Length: 145
Image (cartoon, rainbow, N blue to C red; front, top):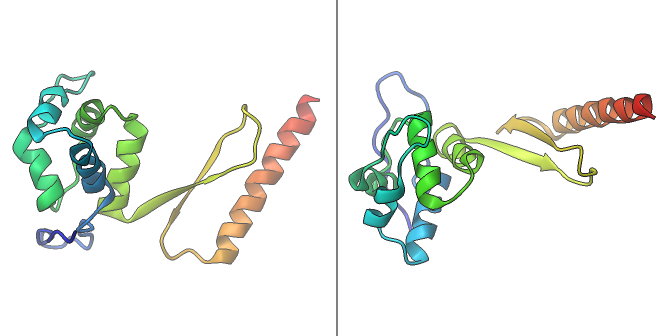
C-alpha cells in the first residue's frame, strides 16, 4: 500500500515516510479488527489526559502530517494500540526522522544495550561503537567480580 505524504513545511528537510512505521502500527491494529473509533476512544495520554482524535489517526495512516505527534499524543496512541510507549516512540522516530535503533543481543538479563544510529553511518563506525560498548560492559562485569 502506498500512501502519499504531505509536503514538508518550508525549510524542513525531513518528510514522513509514506508507509511509515507509526502508520503501519495503526494499520496493523485495523487489520486485526480494530476501528478508528475504538482506537480513538482509548487514545488518552495517562499522564496529561490529552486525547488523539479519530480523524488524526486516519490522517496518520492515509496522509501523514509533516510534523510528528507530540509526546502526549504518542502516549495516547500507545494506550490506544496497547503497545509500550517506547515502541510508538521508535515508530514515530523512524517515520518522521528516518531514525532507527538496533538492539545488540546475546547479553544476560541485567544488560540491555541499545545503540541508536542514523542512516548513513558506515559499517566500520557501527563496529567501532559496538566494540567500545562491549568493552565497557566487560570491564564493569570484571570489576563487580
